[in-house]
Image (tube, rainbow, N blue to C red; front, side):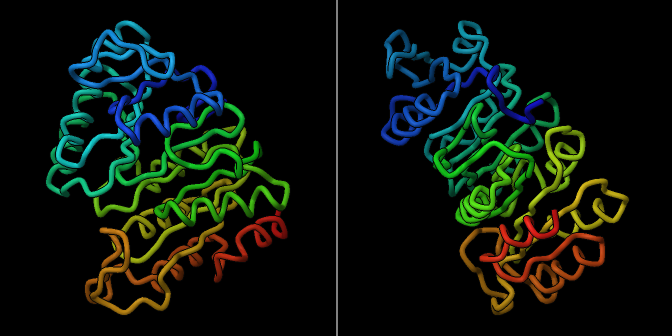
Length: 288
């Protein structure tokens, strides 16, 4: 079983003919993803990268049976693009776009509650089931099929964890970047529940960072008899309080969101906390 994406996933690209959309669509095709077309308003009826172009997501879904969409559209248009995909019946929407206004994302989340669509992101590298399908911008070459699930708020640290897990010979069942913005769709809790139900996942690597409550929420779920080992690394242990550090979600207010508090909560819940990012692969290999 593949969680989120697999060989049967029918993927479309919103912003298909743009520079970024074209580049990453080609990489997804080369990886073996079943990319069935794309959406670029005003360019419907053409072909691009050997795939049909449509004016709307509804047209693309009707013609291709698409169930997954990945967005490469500007921040000002991203919210409408996400809602268009959901309204058309797309099951999984991957919003790579960075810099979408928080109020727009809140509006999107309220809209999605009335649909059956799941959003990953925004500001995500995407999701990959190695050897089957990749939907996003991650380099497919560093991934290897295996049985370790990866959930991360950081795109760069996702790649670091993936490389290390591959290098120690374990590989990944699925790797998901949930996005580094203050408000996102899929959460750590959502991802942990998916991996809990996945018979192809033996353990989970969770990569968090300062700011927000996502890691604390994950700790509460893990404490409630989570059946698989969870390895956690929290970035930002030396970050000064009340200062933004990189991601829009990485801000500490008072004591809330401190990396040390998050690491402590996860450890007390039963997760294996890894102190340095360079030790992720070795720690997982030693414990398993």
